[in-house]
Length: 311
Length: 311
Image (tube, rainbow over all chains, first blue to last red; front, side):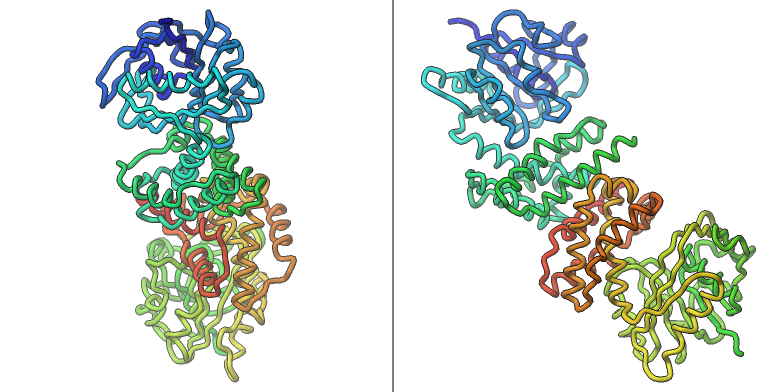
């Protein structure tokens, strides 16, 4: 059987970890890697998983841009943050060929169209990772917990439907759960329920943990989540009625956790304000759904970002 | 004519400045002063006014609590911040006698009842200061601009109505405008329009100036102000229809300004969250007026205060 050729673009914690899993399952995995290039070129990635143990992932090719990748990629997995500074199409374009399946494992809602419009003939898969993992130093990735990867075809058609399932199989084979979602757009809104709430609140409170936020202001969190439910429903993706309660309960049960926006904020790096909050607010405007709390959070996060430029 | 005996309680920038003006106009002005006691005892207050020049204000009595004040006060002027830690009644009680007129120059809405309930037989005057002044070091007060003091009787009755006017006259005589408001409660809501907006936004944005906030998020500011208008109207104090536009225009015209909450936040001191935001939200709840944006700001400021305790 032919070895799958996979190119990971954006190899922070998420891209590095899933790339390492796919290599473990026998795929030929290459990476586009910028900031950690020298380290990775020398010694690959050191994966330190509390669940799966430690191992080294040495990519097949280590390149600085998609244009430098040699050969045809069966899969391109895009794992960068989505910020206005990043043009996702340009990042991957040079490595996309006729049969390349494009997967993006990224946060945010309504982030599909940008890729579907430019690559109408390629299979495009939307991916959602529920994972705690951090890049602790160049080329070193610490996987603390979870890891479930949900994948959903955005434009599956006869003859092309096997790719998402095949990727699932490889991840599962490496010891991490991966599933196919029949309605990945709803799954994305469901994840957004959490992200729209806890990401900005952790930043605006200047670093409170999810636990502390809930202990003090559960009602605010519920208001935000209800607004997300209203928007998702108006967009044709109603969320299960108990979504809010389940999210609140699960977050109480989680260890105190620093959100991705908070980590970015603390490192003075761009935050995914537009992909998570901006796109939610724009969907609400389009569907004429009121979301005053999220409107305020979005505005406040823009102010926060502005004040960050003072530092 | 008998010299007016005035006791100022809470002599930060505001109390010190108005006390100095009243002394300048010939009143016998004493102060309750804690943190700056030693300095003030030795050399009084140095007032440095960009408008009125420099002078020294040496209070008649300098005491550490109202109980230590000797004699009967014609006026007690309370100028502390209003925070849950401060019991306003206890602060003044020991110096209130039968004919003492109680003035509070403090921020916030619905802050009258606490004093009216405890001192039903004393004349109580609500005061609003529109002023830029800072305590730049112990005993040194810098008056940068403005200063207008608006006073309004809360329980005037025959034979007692002259006191607010008399205080006005003394302030005017010292070179700063002071007026009587026939509807001081509305005036308080009008001031709240600005305070509810810019105070929390300056803190939540981690220090942006009023200019920067407006340049980036004028719509958010307008949403907040509209909610304040709705609440004030429901409370029986409708604000003039052009209040929002005037406030926005004036704030654009002001030099970039650090709000009082931002100054407190930066000094790790208690902020007037309850007097300004909490009381506004509670008024809205009582009157069953929706104010989702202010609800969010109030919740976020509580989170902010909570994270401040980590420092």
